[in-house]
Amino acid sequence: MKVEQIYTGCLAQGAYYIESKGEVAIIDPLREVQPYIDFAEKNNAKIKYIFETHFHADFVSGHQDLAKKTGAKIIFGPTDTHVGFDAIIAKDSQEFQLGKITLKVIHTPGHTMESTCYLLLDENGKQNAIFTGDTLFIGDVGRPDLAQKIASDLTQEKLASHLYDSLRNKIIPLDDDLIVYPAHGAGSACGKNMSKETSDTLGNQKKTNYALDLSLSREEFIEKVTDGLMPPPAYFPENVMMNIQGYDSIDNVLKRGTHPLSPQEFEEIANNHDTLIIDTRTEQDFAKEHIPNSIFIGLDGSFAPWVGTLIPDIKQEILIIADQGREEEAVTRLSRVGYDNSLGFLNGGIDSWKKAGKETESIESISVEEYAKRKAEGELLDVRKKSENYSEHVIGTVNAPLDFVNDSMQLVDKNKKYFVHCGGGYRSMIFISILKARGYDNLIDIKGGFKSLKESNLFEISNYVCPSTML
Image (cartoon, rainbow, N blue to C red; front, side, top):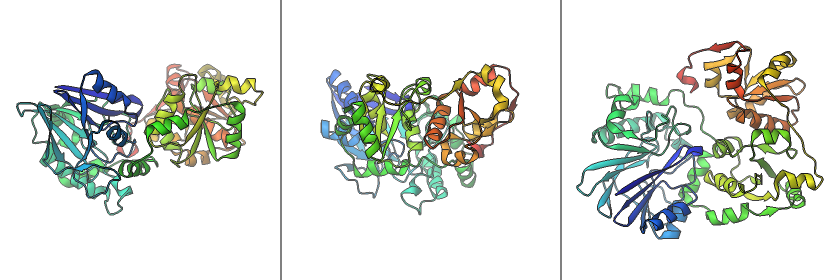
């Protein structure tokens, strides 16, 4: 028996490869499915099943493409929802044989109503591992407020109550030495305060995970699970519907999005379509020179989640600027969160744009030491999350979170100068690029962000304990 966790850091997402006697099951695959196929072929194995723990909101699963390419059966847990492709809707406790091992369906409504865990039983019938999806994370549980975006009568309190029953009746009675494999780790918006660890024993979770505390009453559990939930990214309901109804093949998306465009073609599309230009290079490369009205969201960060957070229309047409050789990566990562309308990339990158005599712009980015000399010129904007700012910030800072940029920009006066920082420099450049495209020209980036501000010992830092309502 082989169990492999395939973890994708930028999405904080775990997919799973399970193999026994030449038969393979994939749990919660990403959109790009070829790596799973290649892995199985390398092991002289065949993919038999594709198990989905629920209708994912934070990414588009690869179940449909993987089934078409391999003939594997797609399996969901119990649900009344009609899906737009062939799938097995399993019953609670139904078992699926994979070589000499068994995967047992454990219906655990709460995060969503169809949420399901899969219990792995070895060839002797012993409990070996459980794949918990968004029902149980390491140190947390799935947020119970997402399904109401699809069904308005499912309040977060109702879902939290279902989750209370699922954990106590279905999960806690299982063996302590069972290995818990969740769908997400720290950084995912599917929970509030997940651990950076991506697996653990169930016994340890019973001791350390607040949601598995048997002393909690139903009312106390509901209060703890729903306290401090921030609004989910706007793209979440769109991804759910794609996962239910189906989507365009990843092959078509890649073919369309990796089409090379000359500077003239690129400019014509930008001028004649309602397109958004996303520059995926590093923040300092973008600061040095970029195409006017382009938005920075770098690949060397949480690229896809920020795209989903900041671009409200999942059907938005997109043009890409990327370092040479990373164009397909950009299109792939956009497709993971359902942004399938990439129209192509600038062939030759920013250098070809300049050689064609096209205009570029720049953003001033200064060191902490330079800011210390010039701080009297303007206000200091902290674009980190409210919780980050509340916990620790430079005295006198105005908090304008990137997460809610349309609200935050109301705090900015076009006629005043601002010095902008985040945690390390990535989010501040995104913030400045968005506002610059909207006519705000007096924003200056502070290199290295709050980390550099704090380490410089040049500024007074205020420390607070962050309340749960700001998580």
